[in-house]
Length: 569
Image (cartoon, rainbow, N blue to C red):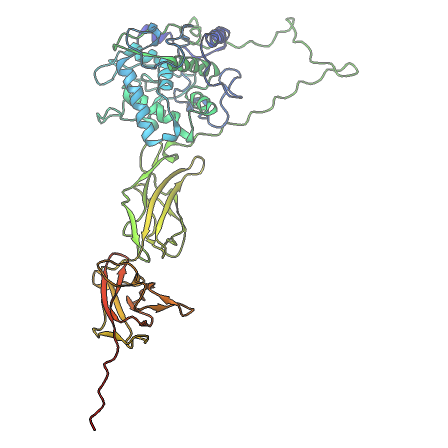
């Protein structure tokens, strides 16, 4: 292991004052990052309330050592400028090795596609990568993004560090006794077993590959439905990686620095960090390493502790017991955390009024790792005024996702009113994911309409037509039940303007009516109201048009009866 990596030791109070002063100086020289949230500004190893990642051996790195180097006081570029500066621009510290930078940006794009609500910025991955491994030892990676030798932290043997016994048989860290943080993003093997990714498509989940490690870090930071554009969520995410307030401040400093501007440098030419997080633990005469001892109580004859505050009357008040800090809420395992909800192949949602939709709304749920999520309740809701409902007459239904993550709603039954409506799928409780589908109901249609008889329709002036007119509308040969039909009396079907004389229907007041809206019955039949002739003889036409464009023209004749000559005497 490289010498500068061996200098990485666990966080401690020794450099707290120096780090705090440097952060203050940095803040004075550039625009501030998002503020640290209340509860994340206390002493070392303070966990963020609610989503810190649990005990220290549950943190992504096992709370392994990290580099405490802070960014230069001169920012790489002025506020508001590009974060993709040319290679020759900006300080050396602003340079990120090409493969490492590409891995961070690829991870941002991948997470945005599966968990857009997280809003993961690649600059946060860059900040953590800088603090954890100096951007993979200055970008010493091969063409596939893999380090030539593993980047390993010290054995987490409880001697100055957390005690984490071996979980991987030494497969990743080469240590079959204790775990060590591994790779550019310094995952302990037990965490990698859960969060490991294959981002470069080589069929392996390798913590020493910057592409795999960056995507795993991105998904880990987004766990628990975090929105990293929110300061409190970002603080919790970083603290879940390493539960140290000083670590959070250091990462925050680099995050703000990289947001101001970066530039790409060749692999292997990045600036290496120099400052470990604490001095090396002391070594006993026997050669074993031991943590720095805590101050012990005074011996007899030594300095006595100061008495507590005096009570009224001269007594000494007992030292108040500290208020116990409630344990942090554990972050849900990634396999149990909803990551995304996506369309599972639902096609266009269109049906005729009263009909059943051929397509059914289907979604697929994925967890925070991008894998299908089974047994997740998904609620589907119909919104609109068409009268469309799911089978069974319900407007809202809930379905559990299957093993492949899909949840399919029952069939939709179109209402009688044409128009548009939506179907919304919702899953998740803490940060729900939703998908909305547009749908429409079209009016019932007929592609043909004919008379049911062929009798000539004749009436004398001022009389009623003796024969009723009955028609049948069909669609693809079947009865077009409920189809709308418009009947119009015209003088010439080629110029279908409503006539102002000749045959007519009558309204409720007995006044002439020459346009009428009708609806076919369940068998597609229409029986027209009585027709009347006025005093104007001639030939007229009745045009009937269906929704769907089918038309029939019926001829009407108004003529006086022939006079019969009286018989000769």
